[in-house]
Length: 77
Image (cartoon, rainbow, N blue to C red; front, side, top):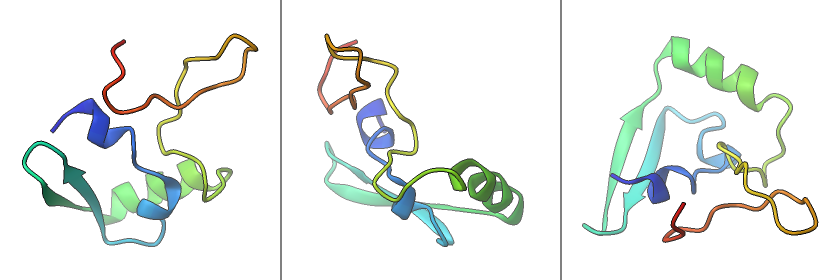
């Protein structure tokens, strides 16, 4: 699993879920990762102030106007 699959996770992908489903592009299959009670509490605290359209792991990259951009899959760092 690569960074490209992980950075594409958005808030609705983990909100009120029992598992996180991440699709692997190279193998074209989906892996499911269980969310235990402790992780559920941490996720709920983390996403409490986020909007459903937000990525779980926002990019630190900014465009030339200083606006944050999302890292697209395949973008080299």
